[in-house]
Image (cartoon, rainbow, N blue to C red; front, side):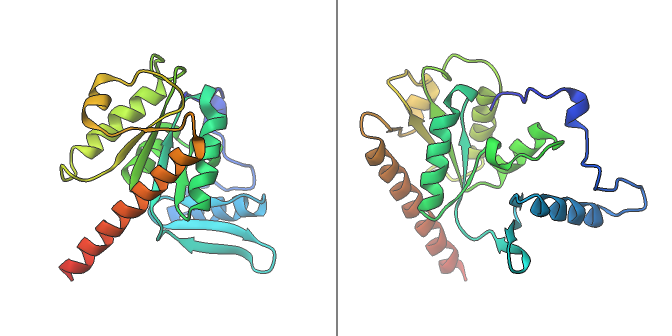
Length: 212
């Protein structure tokens, strides 16, 4: 993701309806943020915990994280394609994470992104002619994901490189990781990604059950 265009002053603002008085605990402040977001008709997600959704009957509905969480890395120029990937993964029953859908106003976006990568089960990197030679947040996210992957078993699938067009992947990615092309057949590529995630998630669940 590229750095948000908002000014530092805007990044540190908190909605007026949310109190920042020192007497409030962290838990109370988080509760206010959740209620404020849900009241505005937005889904508020807390990494590692779950998501609070607006509900016309009960006011809000909480869904704990139980499905594979998939981080989607992209550059601003590929936001439309990344959104399509987000929708496809959500339809497939996963929990995708994308900056444009998940970051909140005033949130510390660099730390929020690192936390989202750390708590994700998979990292989908959208490579294209727009991103391969661009400096900035996308490259930083790739490096951070590679650092996270180094702490995993060697045969574990974490980073899934996607090519949006006929771009040249970085040599380190091309040499070590299997890529999926979303061209010329987008739907076929998405099916490959979904199958890869489902298969890996099933193996992880089986491994956990075998240790019980």
